[in-house]
Amino acid sequence: MVKPTLYGADYSVYVRIARMALAEKGVGYELVPLDIFAAEGIPDSYLELHPFGRIPAFEHDGFRLFETGAIARYVDEAFAGPALQPADPRGRARMGQIIGMLDAYAYRAMVWDVAVERLEKAEPDEKLIAGGLSQAETVLKVLTSLTAKGPWLLGEQLTLADLHAAPIIAYFLKVEEGRDLLARFADIQEWYARISDRSSFARTEKAS
Image (cartoon, rainbow, N blue to C red; front, top):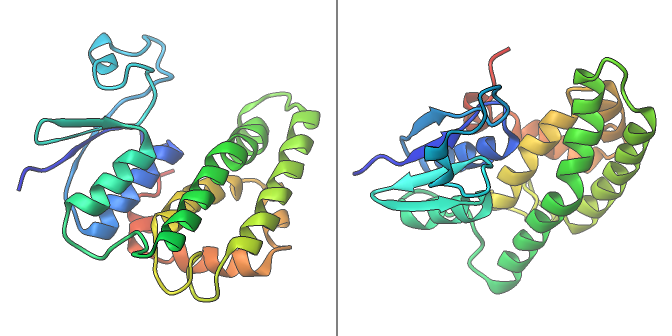
């Protein structure tokens, strides 16, 4: 079997989502480091893989992809292993809804407006952090309302929705405000304890 190649940095939430999907499927892969924030800029050669210069990008036996959602779905469908997407249309629609919500409303607020702002800025913008926390609270409320009964977001089956949510929330929990907010959502906190206990989560955690 031709081993796929993933391009990106281990600090990236979206690279981690793709890596978790590969790990859950038991697929060996090569991670080619690419730091889009490097002083020298993005190599021209990489723009052939991702014309917008974001990460990750993916290549498998001559087939190239960018956009994490497309990569994760391809990994699930192209390789053997446990299915990471529901078989029924409503389940797949709910999975897509959760992933879309996380991309549109959670990632920027939780990762950049709260965690990165708090951790990496010498003088954090408290107004930006407050706005991010307000948005994060709405996300967690909606995620709770969409979560089915069972160990995972969609019930008994671990899906790409779980793998999409885990790295975003993990980054949010790097800061005290994130941990305090999550503690108010018992169902999501319990789900996070389960997903963070999986080997796919531990194996993709960036070393300190």
